[in-house]
Image (cartoon, rainbow, N blue to C red; front, side):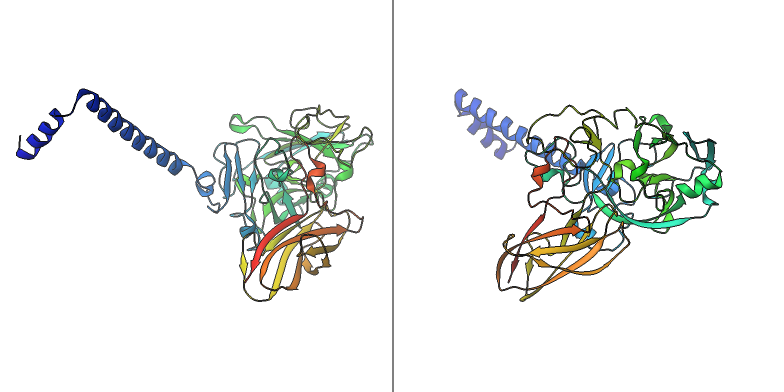
Length: 424
């Protein structure tokens, strides 16, 4: 034992038992705190990024769930490109198919889709056979029906989407009408719905969805094999998914294995009570206002599924909290709806809704795609709140207070967007 160690020992010997107990306690407490801090750091480091959850995704995407995969894009990312790339497109998967969490193609030769139900000639077709039929492209906005859920008050259950559960992509595939004609299959008169089943390979949970044939645009509804000029990414439903432009994503079933034409919609859990909003009995379009915070007993008779996308608009520039130099400020964004009617105007307010001025359209990507708009403003230095409101030819518009359509599952938010920024 050296002199320094002897000095330390003698000092400790001079400490009373009570002080020693306190000292021991403090040492243990500090050690425990440090350990907890390291554990917390380790846990923070273990939180996966989007590219770790899905190979090929932009790490800037927000991970809402690793299993099943739910990734949210951001307004910054969405505003960076006209067509949303596979790296930046959001994901809302209800099931996990082993090995498919990648943006690479899902190459499975011989993948079969069964087509049957109320048609006079049921058939089976492989993806190879589909690829040899005439192909069509359609550009459309793809959106989760829960997008914007976090803005309802009180916040409903489910993934806490803000604005990033949306994107614009170009699909390529075989139109349903082309497929039926190629196989000589005609619909029977009592066919009212399309009921789809996803693959259950690898032990995946069954997923069955229906939506009305009347909602479908047969000039765009397709079995999609490609996205943005490439084979359909595995995580986005490759090798084949149904795409019905103008509808919410829930109806666009991924990893399609079976498609039936039916007289009624599926009674399964994914159809009811999930993905439904309240309606008045006998109505099939408007949402029935419900008391915020209340519960609702969803049935096939008193509610409807999320069919067509409702009208909406986003401000993509400036972003919230931005500081903009100069008096001339260009406010930019996009608007879209279900494609049933053209969007006629986007109005912009820079004073919290006191006055509104029409924006200028810069173009659109077809009736199912973004309507790109710009609103040049002369603004003195100060703080501003900008708002944008879209209206289409059917008179449909966005409510100033999106909470008027509160529902306990948080679907179909389309309240007017508000962005606060500073002019310097």
